Image 1 (cartoon, rainbow, N blue to C red):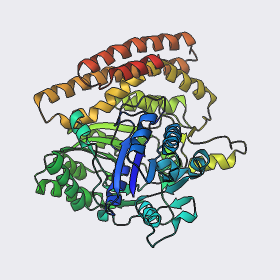
Image 2 (image 1 turned 90 degrees about the vertical axis):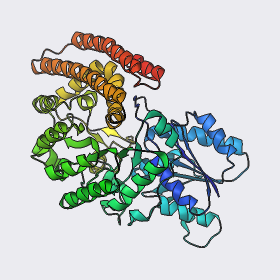
Image 3 (image 1 turned 30 degrees about the vertical axis):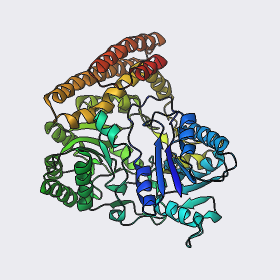
Image 4 (image 1 turned 45 degrees about the vertical axis):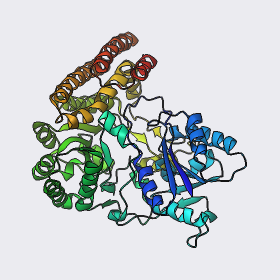
Amino acid sequence: MRCVLIRPLNKSTYYDPEIQEPLGLEYLASILKQSANDILILDSALDNLNDIKLARRTVSFEPDLIGFSITTIDDIDSVLSIYSECRKLLSEKKIKWIAGGNLTTIDASTVKKLLSPDFFLVRYEGEIAVQELVSEWRGEKGSQLTSKQIIDGRVIEDLDSLPFPERPYYQYLKTYGWAFNIQGSRGCCSSCKYCASSGMRNKTNKSWRGRTTVNIVGELLYLHERYNADTFNFVDEDFLGPPAKATVRARSFSLEVRKHNLDISFGIQVRPNSLSEEIIDYLVKSGLKYVFMGIESDDQGDLKKWGRLYCEETWKWIDLLQSKEVEDNAGTLLFHPDCTLQSIRRFSTKLIKYQLFNYRTAINRMDAMPGSYFHKEYLSSHKNSDHLEGIFSLPFNDNKIDSFYSDINKALEPIGSTSMHAICSLPTAQTNRKISELDESQYHRLKELIRLCDNQVSKCFLLILTSYENNANSEKLIEELANENLIYSKDIADQLIAEGFVRSPEMLYKAIHHEG
C-alpha cells in the first residue's frame, strides 16, 4: 500500500516558534516500511504547505491510505480542509483514512463527531494497530479491526524492538541547527490530576516504559554517523523514570555515551524528585545542556491536591544545574483554582530570584485537559457543562483573581511573542555554543535579550500585583503597561532578527502587531 502520513497545520492564534519534527509519524513510517509499504510524510509547517497545496501533494503520491496525527483541537480545521480537497481531487477513488495522535487518544468522541465517518480512529500507541489495519486491507489474515471505528492500539512493551524512526527532515534540522528529537521512554511515573497523560494510557499500559540505554545511545550513534548530528532533544515526559532506578539509568546512559566518545549536547524533561547530585553530575558529563523541570508550585498543600510529590530540594537542584551552566526552564502554575494574591506573590518572587520567571510562567494557568482527572471531575459535577469541548480553564475560587489574571494578560500580551521566540531559541543556542566562537557569542547575546524580556515581564507583573494588593488597580495602568510593552517588544524583536535568531521576521512582526 502507498501511505501518506500527515501532520496538519495547527491553527491556534497563539504564536509558537518552536517547530519540531513529527516523531510519532516518523516512528509509524519506519514500522510500515518493514512491510514494504511506500511512505510519504508531509508536515504542514516544515514543508511550508497550506492545506490546499498539501492535499495536492498528497494526491499526487497516489495513496491508498491517508493518515493524520491530531495533537489538539486546533488541528481539526486543517484536517477537514485537507480531507475535503483530497476527496475532490481523488474523485471516485476509494482510499482508507486514519486519524491518531494525542487528541484522538484522550477525546476520541469529539474527534469522531468532527471528522467524516470515513475515518478509523486509533487511540493510544498506533504502531501495531496501523500495521494490522494495513495487513487487513491488503487481504492478509490477522485481526479484524475494521469492524469498529475507534480502535485501541496495543502497547509496545519492549521499546527496543521498534526500528529507529525515519528522518525525512534531517536537512531542515541541520540547516537551522535544531536538535534531533529522541524518545527514550514512553509515559510518566506521576499521575498529576491536571495532566492528560493518564488519559493516554489504556488499561494494560504501564505508566512508564524505557528503552535500554544501549538502544538509546545506539540511535544517537547512528544519527551522528549518518547525519553528523550532535544536538538532541529528549521528548520524554519523564527522562529518568522511577526515582528508585534513576541513578542507575543516569549512570548507565552516561557511561554508554562516553564509551562511544560521543561529543553531544542534549536537553531533557525531568521531575525534581528524580534528581540528585550524582545524577546531575553523570548527565552533565555526558552532555546535558538544557532541562525543563516540572515545579508547578512551591506549596506542599497544592501539590498534594494535584497528586504531585513534594521535593524539598527542588531549589537546590536549580542552583546546582545553573552552577554547571545547564539552562533551566520550569513548568509552573501560578494561576490555579485555589491561588491567592499572597500565594502568587510568594511563588513569583521565588521564581524571579532563580531567574525562572518569564512570559510563559507569568500567564500559565491550570486548565482542564481532556483525559485528566480534573477534566472528568469538573464535567461530572457541573450538569450544564455539556457544551464544553477540548481544553477549558478551571475557575478561580477567589473572584479577584479573575480580573487580576485578565489584566496581567492584557498588559503582557504585546511582549508575549517576542519573549516566547527568545525563550524557544535558547535550547538550540545553548547546545550549539560548543561549535564555534560565533555560536558562543550569539548564545550570550541571546541570554542578554532574554534577561531584558524577563526583567520587563517581572516589572509589569509586580506593578499590577502591588496595585491589586493595595486595591488600586486601574485600567489606565494596564493600558500604559501594554503600550510600553508593545514598544519594548518591537525593539527586542529587531535585535533578535539582527542577531539571526528569527527565521521568519514577518511572522514575528505579525504576531506582535496582532497582540498589540
